[in-house]
Length: 272
Image (cartoon, rainbow, N blue to C red; front, side, top):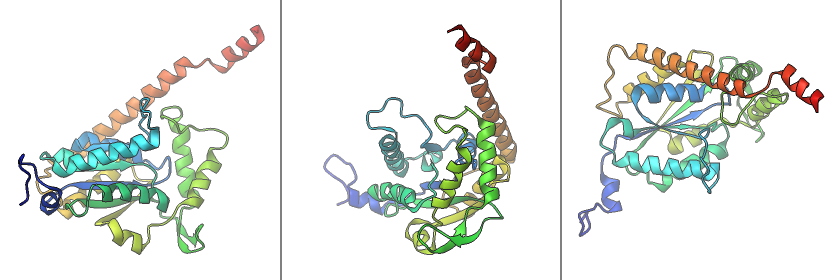
């Protein structure tokens, strides 16, 4: 009853199969460190990463549609994967507004994630000085504070051109502040609708420390029974961060080499 003439499982049968697939949804402003942490986890756990910052490589669908198409593919792949690494998926995009998170949840529903046993953990990047205030909906909730925004701004400035499309400029402070004002806190109703677990991490911690906390929380859930970490996994987190930092520095250096210095640029203008 659960299979077709070709031996393939029907959707009804698939929904009855136990699954140990896990989706981590990262929530944080640009510059909060989400992508760095996600890449560290990907390097150490060999898991799948779907990032909104990744270029669509000329995909005719456009970057947003390409992102959600890849997300649906990876989620579906995860539900039928046998190896541990394919069963853990990280969603890397701001997800700070209810609408952004709803878009991700729609994709989860499309592949029957929850019905087929998939688990979802929300990871919030927060700051201890974030306080309660009125949101855009007029409701009192936890709001992103000035110190939180300042850390994100500094990181974007330090990162410089080592990013696909979010660069520092004269309007950076306002862009981050605007995103903070637009952010919606995940309330109890939303959390109950699709979250199986939630973890808050303080963005001022180092990326390896945040990655360690996420891994330890995953171990506590026991969602991936065969997830094994050797005694050197903390060292591996540090090495992965160092490699990521070097790659970012090389990116900045390579980009800067292609750009004329301010003096050279002025000379070019004078010559013409």
